[in-house]
Length: 207
Ligand SMILES: NC(=O)c1ccc[n+]([C@@H]2O[C@H](COP(=O)([O-])OP(=O)(O)OC[C@H]3O[C@@H](n4cnc5c(N)ncnc54)[C@H](OP(=O)(O)O)[C@@H]3O)[C@@H](O)[C@H]2O)c1
Image (cartoon, rainbow, N blue to C red; front, side, top):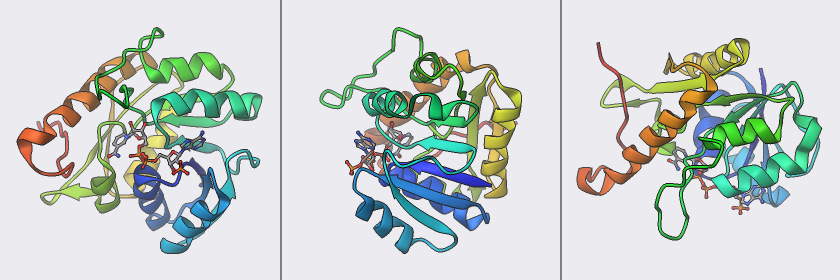
């Protein structure tokens, strides 16, 4: 599968490593082309580099940027996102106070869907931390990747990226469930100080 990842930060590295190790083709889009080149050069597999604004490669686009930037990126690409599987991984927070933001649309993912009506939006990877995604496991247990989307085929496509990397995909339902996923992602962030694992923990459903 050909996957475009917008961003060259922590989550771009984590999801990029996961996808490359599973044999997918990945293109990183950096605000500066050289950031993407550097990241692509550090990772093994078929990684390419591009600049934000370049045409999008592949059918899956991961928005590995902070919540306020997702809107900017979606507006920038406009109808170039039509028919693409667009993965929103954000946990909307005020970057100064770190308080949670609840977007008017109900969730960041629903906001993306409203701004890009032709895109097939999937909420995923917001409850997993960057370092654990690259490792694929915590304490010997595969990560759970919770997914929400209205487009079942798009959701299955993203689930297969997680599963190809040895993670467990857990279907959380329609895109409206992104509200609960964003709340869960925020909860996972705020317990970090007490846990002391340095963003090395995982949310997992056991049965
Ligand atoms: N970190 C985690 O463990 C984690 C876990 C779950 C979810 N998330 C979510 O994942 C998202 C990314 O988090 P992160 O930790 O990977 O952040 P990060 O390391 O700060 O990376 C953010 C990326 O966004 C890029 N960027 C900034 N402005 C941009 C613009 N206008 N257009 C395109 N790209 C732009 C940055 O590029 P420059 O460096 O060039 O500015 C950087 O590559 C956030 O929404 C976060 O809530 C993070």
